[in-house]
Every structure is written in structure tokens, then in C-alpha cells.
Amino acid sequence: MAKASIFISSVQKEFAAERRAIREFIEGDAVLGRFFDVFLFEDLPAADRRVDEVYLAGVDRCDVYVGLFGLSYGFEDAEGVSPTEREFDRATLKGKSRLLFVKVGDETQRRPKMAALLGKAGLQMVWRRFADTTELARELSRSLADRLEERGLLQNRAFEDRPCVDALEADVEPALVAAFVRRARDERQFALAENTPVTEALEHLHFRRDGHPTQAAMLLFGRDPQRFMPAAEMRCMHFHGTEVERPVPLYRIFKSTLFDQVDRAADFVLSVLNRSVGTRAVSTQVPVVYELPPDVVREAIVNAVAHRDYASAAAVQVSVFADRVEVRNPGHLLPPLTPARLREPHGSVARNPRICEALFLAHYIEKFGTGTLMMIRLCRSRGLPEPVFEQQGDEFVVTLRRPKSALMDGLASGAVAGSESRPESGPESRAEWWRGRPEWRPEWGPESVQDRVMAAAQERPLSRADLAAALGHKGVSGALRRAITDLMQHRLLAYTVPDKPGSRMQRYRAVQPEKGP
Image (tube, rainbow, N blue to C red; front, side):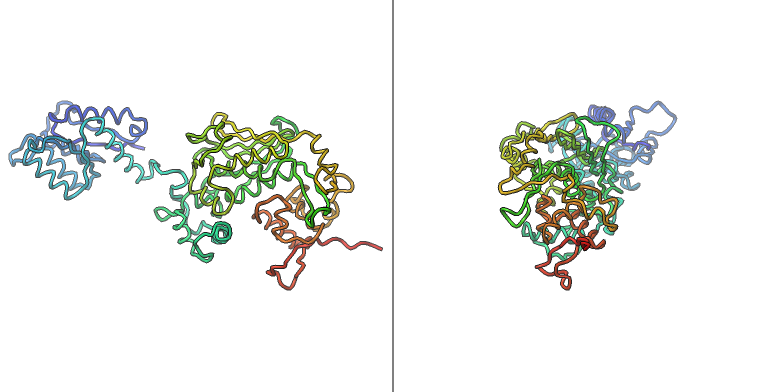
């Protein structure tokens, strides 16, 4: 891409230092130097041409006219007009992008014709004052950066606030927006009605800019977010040992909205963790105890999504090892936060405030900096090692230490009050009969969401909220809704009130095979 040419117009004698300073500043700036070249009349070699033809030709060729006006009007030609005014008029006539800077000085010393030129310019454009070369460079840098941003060559806005210029409103899924509004109304008394048009909802959430959905809107509600932001995905891996080894035994990449990524990644981790299933000796709901508290796992994942650097080409990575769970996200903690401060009361500092607001409204997070303290408290209450928060290069890492087998042996032997725990994989396992049914799909392997729903529903009919609690979810996630739909379609689950699917008393029961004589 060819650089844009800047023509500097001024009384040369009055602004000799400023003219040189501007060129040196732009040529030395790592960003502006990539986009602009500076033309100075005094650098031209001798030529057999009239002076006025040369400088006006320079204005004709330039992309940006920069005028420096001061006290002096400068040399006047036969018609009483200075080169400075000729250049300004030519830039106006040719429709050039004009930037004007006026040096602060004693107004009583300003020449009448320069005062008149300033008056003429003031009727056409906004100009800035400067006192010295440092202030001039700062004001010029801002103006040139605005020009680059208008042309899409430079982004000054935060990543989440930038318009997704290749996306149209049709790329936003209305059902996702409606589901979000419904949940936000239930969880946070959100003001919008559930039937609010998509455009109005996006405007209310500050998710539209320059006629396009923002990057945040596509990440949260897009039909195919990774079409526009390929790196905004979640990579989940399960290793049987304590190191990264190939081939990876279980590897999933979730390409979807951020809400769905959180739900599916949490399900992935919980599906491969050890857990103990008790009996109904204490309550009507079968107690399920995971080796790591589900809320801690979920908090680590949702924080990675909320605070990652979305300008990075790296993805969020969740790894389950034999001794630990690691959640990695690209980006650094924002000051004044440090890994040590996450272990004490602290305020919330959001890298992506729009995304965090949406996650808050959907009750995925709070906004008070309490998440890490909750993780520490829950781990302590279970006698587990506290989470480890670390900055490792360009990645922020949360490590959750899995308990030793002795603890899980205790859980398996009935350490949960009032429970008689059963192992998850023995011949008497709760997960047997439906896996042998012809309706069972290969992709619904052991420990999938579908598998865990069937495990819970075989004990007794459960509502959606009951199933969410049995799976360790805070609410009815998208992954759970899909699993229920799948199982209903394949006749592995059935309604308890089949004539009224929308009944408040509706429950889901496992359709077990008939026993032979």
C-alpha cells in the first residue's frame, strides 16, 4: 500500500523548526511512518520552474494538507496574496483532507491579513492551537490517527466495541438474542421485553456501531462467530497422564457463541472428572459429588472467556490431566490486578466490559471481583488445594489440583452424609442399559451430556431445573437443552405430562426397556 503524502503549508521562516519537527516525528513514529510521507518545499532541488507552480503542484499531489498559521502572513505576490493563503485555497478547491494548527502568540502582533485568513478558515473547519513542537506533534498525531481509523486502517476502539464490518444484522441469531433477554429479565430484572426487535436490543446493549453488529455482538449472538473471529474458540483436552502427550485421548474444539462455549467446556471437564452418586436417604434428589466443585470449574472457564485478549490469535485452552485441570487464556491481568491480589478482596477490572456486562445479565458472572475468592473458599471447604493463579508469558493460567485417590475412595465409600455411593464404571454401573439401546448415538459416548442426563433421569422423573442441578449447572444451559431434545427425539426420554408439553408440572423420565418374563 502506497503511503499518503502530507503537504506542510506555512510561512517557512516563522515555522522552520516546526516543519522539520513534524517530518522527523512522523518518520520516526512506528505507526504513522507506515502510512505517511511528509513533503517539505525547502527540500526540493533547484529546477527551472516558477516557485508558485511548484508549491501548488505539491498541494495537488498530496493526500493531506497540514497548515501551520502564526503571526506572520508571509511574502505577498503581485496580487497581494501569500503562498500560505494560495495553498490553503488550492487544498480547499481540490477537496483535500485539511488539518489546521494555529500557534499561540500575542494576538496584537498578528498581521491583519493572517487574522483575515484565520477568519476565513474558521468558517470552513475546526482548527487546533499549539504552544510548542511537542504539543503540535501530539495534536497532529491524534488527527492523523482519526483519519486512519475512519478508513479502517487503524483501530483505536477496544476490540469488542469495533464494528464487525463483514457482518450484517442477518448474521445475528434472533433466537439467541430473545433467549438472552428472557434470561436477563429472570436473573437481573433486565428492562427490555422478550419480544424486543434485534436491532433495538443490540442498540440498548451498545452492540451496534456504524450500521454493523460489534465484535462483541457476534461473539455472543452470532450464527457463526468463528467465521469472523477464527481464534475465538474453546479447545478442551483430556490427558490420562500429567503431561501433554500425543495423541490426545480426548480432544474437543467448541466453535460457537461464548455462552455455549462456557456451557460445553464445563460439561467436558465435569464429564471426565471422578464423581460419586449417592442415594435418596437424605433428600428426594440423588446427591452427586464431583472431585472438584462444579462452581469452581465453571468460574475458571467463564473468567477465561470474559477476560481473554480477543485480538490474540490464540484460543482459550482447557486441559484435564491426571493431577490437575488447567484453564489458559491469552492476555495479561490489567493493572492494578496481580495474581497475588486475586487471593484477597479486590475490585473488578474488566478487559472486555461489554462482554462482561452480558455475562453478568445472564448470571454467568458477578461484577464485584468475588469470583476468585469464591473459588478459594469452595476448595478450602472441601479440603482441596487452593486454585493457583499465574501469569505465564502471554497467557493467564488457572490451575485446579485434583484430589488424591484417597479422597475419592472416601467419597466412594459414602463420605457424603446419608449417601451410599456407587462407583461410576463397575458392572453394576448406573450407565448401562441405555448405551445398549439401538437409539443411542455413537457421538453420545460415556460421560457426554446425554449420558449424564440419562443417569439422572433414571432415578426419578426430573424437571429441566432438576437436571441442571444434577449436572452441576447454575441454570438450564444450551448444551442441556440440546441434550434433552436429542434424547426426546430418539425416544430415550419422555414427558410425564405428554398432552401438555409446556406444563409447569412437566418432568422428563427415562424410557427404560421392558423386562422380559
